[in-house]
Length: 276
Image (cartoon, rainbow, N blue to C red; front, side, top):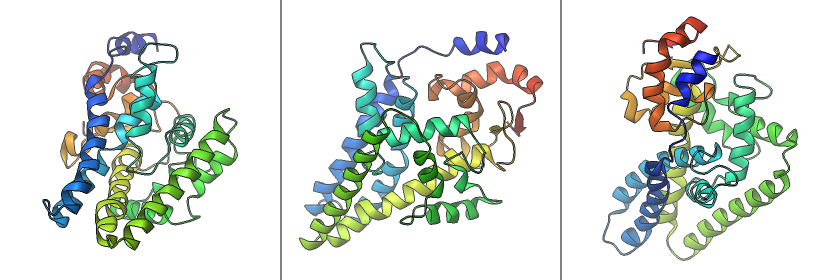
């Protein structure tokens, strides 16, 4: 363990400015699609495609903030950490505090069918996982997240639930207003449909793939190193997700270098390595 920690510390402590630019820039990019499409400058089909890409990129900057990598509590950059955490999740309609409360439970109970809020995406194949992900997003169907929140003792829980309610009400109100104003197709193709695509993509690569087949628990068993058939970039660096679970404060862009530095040590510990 000491050897692991000594190596891992070399990849900690840097403020990931690229994630700040990614999170805030992606949000501004998504917002810009609306006037471009509504003014007729950008075709709706192109706006939908770009929005799908933007949605797929929306979670990871907030994930960095959830682990206080941008700015720890009490430091000068804490405000920036929280800003990125909140703003980058707005298009996905996922409240930052709910994300953090549930994500802590995922780390503590990865692959536990009753305690891991992301366990609902587990399935034998990737396409079955996408289907399970879609079912989990239906109204009143996300049992994993509901159970996690019901049993949470986090002091910010009530605030998180209020923020979740307000965010979801605002989302549906905006969709309704747009539809009433004659922009139903724009609302559907710029927000609702890309949101569904984004969540399917994110849950496939962030939840299912790094933990597949999801039948092991423990420090060296609940996550794997794996060779993605679509490459590191399209899988958003999740080939190295095992490093994140072992050392959550290593920034995303450092997990790859950290993995190669730690690989020999981790393989002695018995991590799962599927071709990487």
